[in-house]
Image (tube, rainbow, N blue to C red):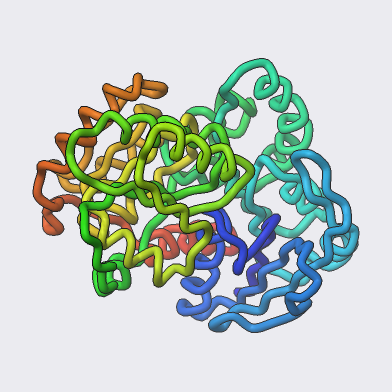
Length: 359
């Protein structure tokens, strides 16, 4: 079966969707699917066509960048003329223009993974909902199947786009548990509290920094990720006197080592479609503290019963600090407790959806 995975960006770029598509593409190739990734790319130094562990990757230059959307005319032309060559075309990310362009190409069978999360954060976020609906809605209505990564995402999506409930499937993300647990932890002089993700306002890394200034337990904060908030967060950490390592983007191997080194993993994000970083922290046997959002509440079910603490969104720093204090005083989470999903679990689930479509 020949499958095209269409995405707004692909590795080596960092991000949850990029990682999802990368692992999923490799998993399909291992199951003897013929897989091509079609991606937009602003970095002219990356090859236009390459092979990645059995996956053919085509990168199309994207000279046009709008505030929330990246547009590649080359990719548009390709999608409008060549999609009939694939048995399945699978577009990703409701919040980008890619699914709509893919749908306009009228592939024989269209699958969409939206990674949808409802807007939050005020008037600007609510205004952005209108272009999302105009661009993402038609693609979902044309899709033969819609694969959500959580029940929380599926529920929110049914409210966003009417008339798609009968085509929704929920297949959660996974992690490479074996690879993470084989990683050698970094040697640290003090316990580590770890935060991983893009440095953007809705991730609320600022709240984690402020909370660490209230923690009495001796520990260091390590922040993995980059983004427009990096400078402000560095200034904040210096102002409140929190010992913080800002590592920027790191390789998967180094990330796994930090996950294994961390005593506590914290994510206070205000919105997510799935808690992928939480799942990675469970695999690394860290204690997890997560914001009280639907996707996080759902994800912690896959971890050990003693491995997670849910904290209200936007909690006061001292409330989060108390949770961190408790977690630092606990032993590492029990690896035998819980059912941590793997990328192979996810790939098998999606492959079954493909086969049901192709017959």
